[in-house]
Each structure stands twice: as C-alpha cells, then as structure tokens.
Length: 136
Ligand code: HEM
Image (cartoon, rainbow, N blue to C red; front, side):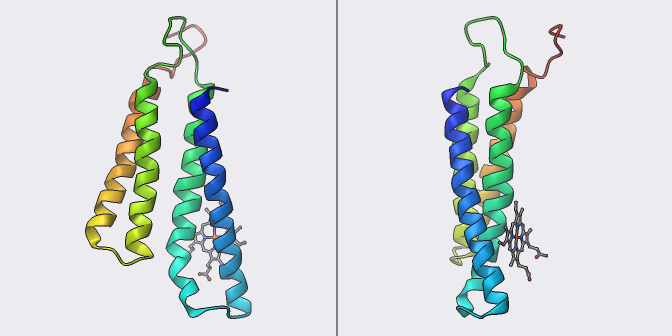
C-alpha cells in the first residue's frame, strides 16, 4: 500500500472513532440524559462518519487500488491526491466550526467549498487511472 493511502486510511479511522464515540454518547443521552449540550454534536457525528470516514476511506483505498501506469509516475499525479486529502480535512473542520461552534456562515460555505474541491482534485487524479486491463 502506498504511503499516501496509509495516511488517508489511518485518518479515516480517527474519524470512525470520533464519529462512533459521539454516536454512542448521543444514543446513551436519548435513554439516560447526560448533558443538554450533547445534541449540538449531532452535526459533527454526521460529518465525521459520512465525510471523514466513508468518503475518506474510499479515497484512500481508491488511490491504492486503481490501475497503475508503466511509467515512473505509476500512480499518476500524487500531488492532486495530497491536495484532496488536505482540502477534505480542512473542509470537515470548517463545517464543524459552523455547525457545532456557531462560527460565521462563511465557515460553512468555505468548508463545503473545500470538500467539493477535494472531490474535484481526486477525480482529476483518478480519471486517467480508470482503465481496463488492456489499458483503454
Ligand atoms: C457509518 C456509520 C454511521 C453513519 C453514516 C451515521 C449517520 C447518521 C446520520 C446521517 C444521522 C442523522 C439522522 C437524522 O437526522 O435523521 C445520525 C443520527 C444518529 N446516530 Fe448515527 N451514524 C452512524 C453510526 C452510528 C453509531 C455507531 C451510533 C451509536 C453507537 C449512532 C448513533 C446515532 C444517534 C443516537 C443519532 C441521533 C438519532 C435521533 O435523531 O434520534 N450512529 N447518524
């Protein structure tokens, strides 16, 4: 597995842990109230699991598994995937700053923009690697 996939997949596991922890606390809180502020973390639970875990794990595995080229740059333009990795994580925390910590609405716009940017960069990288066994 390439080093970049290791970074992305391990980061995804951190979000899985965070997301499940908040999920478990919320579930507990529904049965036995713990703290009224806990519901404020529901958006973080959703963001961490849908984007931080599911999207990020997919990115990490796709970078590893898509067909390689014969040339020196065997996995294509790696810089695009580093940019996608950075933007996705920046986006997650900007969205959480808005939805949990009531930061300005601009944080939400910037966060979603960063996440869309991550998807675009990743797609730009992956497009040329989406090939059949015959290379066409
Ligand atoms: C990949 C796994 C998961 C994903 C993508 C996910 C996603 C979501 C989403 C989208 C919601 C909002 C649902 C709505 O507003 O209708 C939600 C709510 C919730 N989730 Fe999760 N979740 C996951 C795993 C878990 C786990 C493992 C737990 C508990 C241990 C959990 C506990 C909760 C609770 C308590 C709520 C609030 C339900 C309510 O509104 O009454 N989630 N989750």
